[in-house]
Amino acid sequence: MSLDTRTPPVEARPERVTPREARRRLEHERASRLAQLQAIGDAGREAQAVEEADEAQVMAAQRDTIERVLREVEAALVRVQDGSYGTCPGCSKSIPVERLEILPYTQFCVPCQRKTG
Image (cartoon, rainbow, N blue to C red; front, side, top):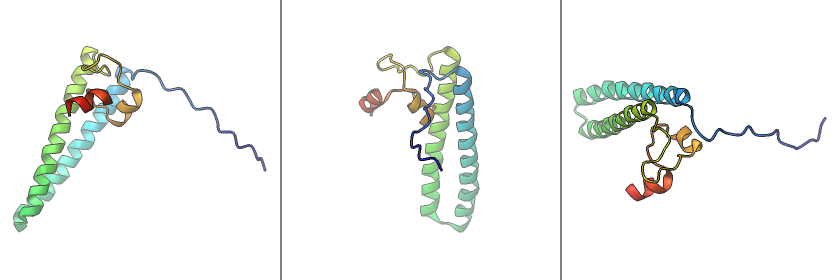
């Protein structure tokens, strides 16, 4: 039994996301959101049939949020196409890869996002 407690070396992350990887992540994000939208639509019709007004309002708010994210995903795909993906328009610096892994459709780095509210 080995008592070696060293951790294996961590692979260095690239400084930028490749356009291919960005498109792959964005397409996955779009597919996920479209599936959520479909599920909310099905549940929303059921809620309206039962006349559950509160549940229908919640689902409408969720639908609006998902539709907003879908618009952001589409805008990010345009940025991939034109080469501006991963560059913050607020400060012109590269958006950290870790942020793009979490929010592949984000337009701003964290400091600029805080400024825009």
